[in-house]
Image (cartoon, rainbow over the protein chains, first blue to last red):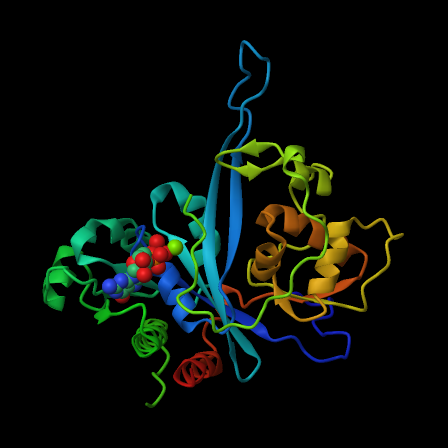
Length: 200
Length: 145
Ligand SMILES: Nc1nc2c(ncn2[C@@H]2O[C@H](COP(=O)(O)OP(=O)(O)O)[C@@H](O)[C@H]2O)c(=O)[nH]1
Ligand SMILES: [Mg+2]
């Protein structure tokens, strides 16, 4: 919180506080779909550009080359009572986007790692990252048609998850399913942070 | 980079749009990885960091007053931010509406903060993630969807 700066609007009302949840996972796993399913506004896209300066001067043209990486994230918003606004960020799980992950994970309530059983290894970097960083997360297995049916304990083993990391099935296109995933994630985050879970 | 995707269904009201004119495409230096780079650089006079404020993606910003008219050393994009911020809006939403990189928007927000044209609310730092009311509000909000 920044003190000394006004955090009120021009009519003197206090601004709400924003919180965020990260939706991570490999390409095509359903991140954008999940964000769109629960968002109250049309999802927007934000872009971050990383520039590595001083990579060297090109001998021929004399032009300094800069290597840039752009990462785009789709995000949505849900306005909560009690002056909170929840943002959901669909964050691509490739390691080359790590510069973005640190920023998105900082201060996040928690994360949902989406997994597709046809390409389970795509979610390894996300799982590793949140484990290392200590961000509370759950794994939601997005059930695509034609994907092999796995038991949840099998997936738990395949991902080498700790016994306390919840794993559940979901359909990113279904509002009820996404709500359940997100509520379970928030309950898990409370538990992880030593807060009593809210009564159902 | 991924192509822009359409949301599953059109159930959202129209979003406010920035009203500054689109730059003709020949004015843009297009780097196929980074997209248009020169114009954001000009908007910020080459500055990479805001003079004030960190501007997390979910820092909420609101205009301290009505849109200022031109003559205050503000560029058209600063004015667009002021227009969007007549409603409370996150830094991420501003970048989405303006279609500009986050770093560029941050620098311009720093200028506006410096001039007292905007107010803001920073998000909870991670250390403060122990407020049970926050979790209850989020769970109730999700249940009500
Ligand atoms: N069958 C099925 N298809 C899905 C599901 N979630 C997403 N899709 C589809 O999978 C494709 C990729 O989803 P998208 O949300 O763009 O993935 P992203 O790359 O993680 O953002 C889209 O065509 C979606 O319609 C799901 O739960 N079940
Ligand atoms: Mg996507």
